[in-house]
Length: 148
Image (tube, rainbow, N blue to C red; front, side, top):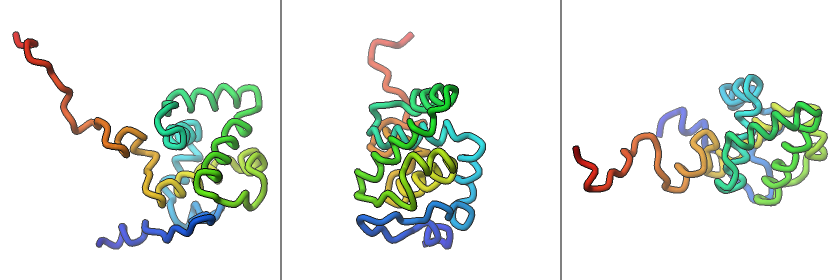
């Protein structure tokens, strides 16, 4: 096991967050920076995983941008935090989901990304790849009879 792999492993305890809300700079700086620069993309990735592929990352990202344009992006994102909490029986801590997303959305998104990753789902890979779907390394199927 490499040093980097050992660093990314985190003990998962049911009913507890694997990291704190403000652990972004101490544990996963690249995700933290990405979330601060592109929060809509980070949110889209998280939403796609939590919706088990029912909502595409692009659509989820677009929805949070649209909701943010009328001042409600934090509300939309907080619903997915609640979904994550319910899925893994996590506490609503350190305060309400809406307050966390309203006052520090990038920190919330970074924590949610880390949580999914520590539980074996990497939002940056997407839902299909995590579940055996096609990825960019798989050539497309070409039916016979399509020869020149």
